[in-house]
Image 1 (tube, rainbow, N blue to C red):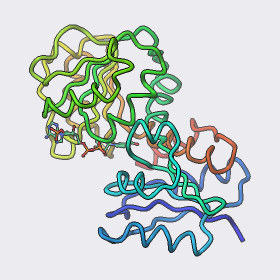
Image 2: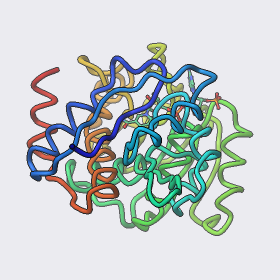
Image 3: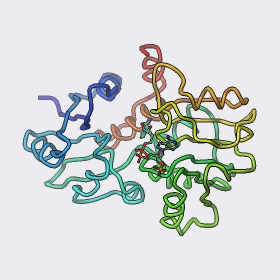
Length: 271
Ligand code: NDP
């Protein structure tokens, strides 16, 4: 019988992860099944324990369970520890190991797929929630000159900087209205696009030569991407990040990192 994995969330019907992992399994010759798993809002732990009983080898975790997954894990990898959130679970030897591949997926998409190295660069990170927190350590590992974290609630951005005190010389927290200077890369890690909102930063942030990436994705460019493009920036949605975080999870489970280029192209075409 094939090894079984799934993605746990609520809602979950929209998830593209089964398509991505099926493509990875076919490309690498790995024998596995990957499904969607809807967990009741109050039933994440029960769902995980049930999957383990059924012999599942691991799971991805998505909204709204990433923080709960971090609490449930019996062991956390350093990326999950830094993020305080888990998007990948490994069930092995009676342990529930939690990791976080969202940040590495983001960095892989920027550096490899978009071809934008981050070393020495100035990065504007919009948002200070789970996705921004998970992105911080992988972004810092690329040795940027500075990361400015701007958030609607300033105190949350300040807390994030305080939690990464070892990197304080390269981090700054601010409100959207106080962002100034120029940036090489602007990352929208807010969920504002869900409400068709654009974080109110100065349009001058998005000049030519700037890469503006929205972690959100959909069939159409997000309002953030439209706004950034109208002020001269190159734009990217979060689909590449999604495929790359899946490849990192696949690597953790199967010991092989699948090629992502063809899968990303196919996902874009499928819409
Ligand atoms: P959280 O709920 O943890 O954080 C939300 C963040 O967005 C907070 O900083 C919040 O600010 C801010 N925010 C919410 N609404 C608005 C608004 N209208 N205007 C300005 N700021 C706003 O969410 P996550 O961090 O988990 O996710 C953020 C986004 O990233 C989501 O859209 C998610 O879909 C996407 N994502 C994409 C992934 C991918 O693979 N492509 C992976 C993970 C996430 P405040 O603190 O003031 O409330």
